[in-house]
Length: 236
Image 1: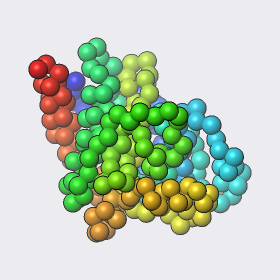
Image 2: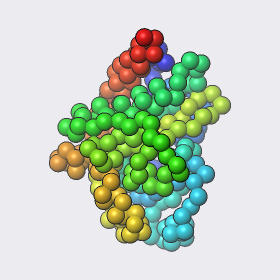
Image 3: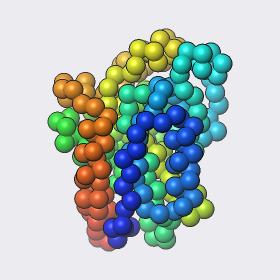
């Protein structure tokens, strides 16, 4: 996979949740090496693939509050959107390439991104879990990026006929007030204590657009460097 050198890099803008997820599924079916950076409008949440919808997340009430609700085509828990930068990575399926290498490369790319903006981050690739994660950024999980003891990014994947689709989200700014008001108290407390926005960790203003441009600019270098390192380690 270190030989993937024909990446299609897409810097997309704000779109409604359903449209963003439909685009990711279409790219996964196309099965060409692609990385896409995008944001959400309006703010809202996405459920992991086949994740049960909690009782508090009533679609009618949610929509009336002006918030988005959708299901992602990948796993994981409830992800919060509107002040995050989302990324989707499509990698053609090839023999001899481990999922841990793919996910490790994506997580490490996000680590490098955080460091570029002055936050000392580290990746957590494998966490033993006895049950499904409910809130992506507020619970320990595999394929996460941490700043200190708090999570700034999470990733999940799904196998498609000819590709792997990896989706992730990096929290750039604190949750929008509208979203915070709509979340149950226990979720608010969990996000406050266990998640961190990149702008909070760096103590300087950063925007989704600026972060997306920086990630897109270095994506190939970071990906290739990490995959070469991992392949070399596997051969030793």
